[in-house]
Length: 127
Image (tube, rainbow, N blue to C red):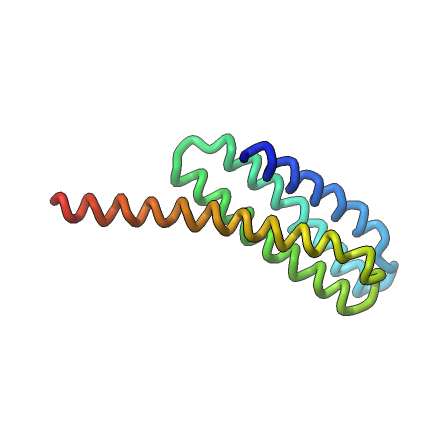
C-alpha cells in the first residue's frame, strides 16, 4: 500500500509541476500556480516523511498533513478549472486523481485516529 500511495502522490506532483508551467502569465495565473505548486508537491513529500516516521503518532501526523495538502490541491485544481485558465478536459483526470488521493489518505488517517482513540479508551477502562 505504501508504494501505491507514494507513487500516486509523486506522479500527481509531477503533473502539478507541468500544469503550473502552463498557467497564464498574468497575476491570477502566477498566484494560483504558486499555490498549487506548493500544495501539490507537498502531498507526496509528506507521505514520504510519514513512511519514515519514528513513531505511530509521527506517522499519523505526517499523513494528516498530506491529507490537508491533498484537499488544498484539489481545491486549487477546481479553482483553475472554474476560472477556465486551462481547458476542462486537460484537468479532469488530475482532479479525479486528487479526489482519489484525498479519499485514500482520509481512510488511512481515519483508521489511524480510530485505533488511537480506541487504545486510549481501553487504557482508561483498565485503570
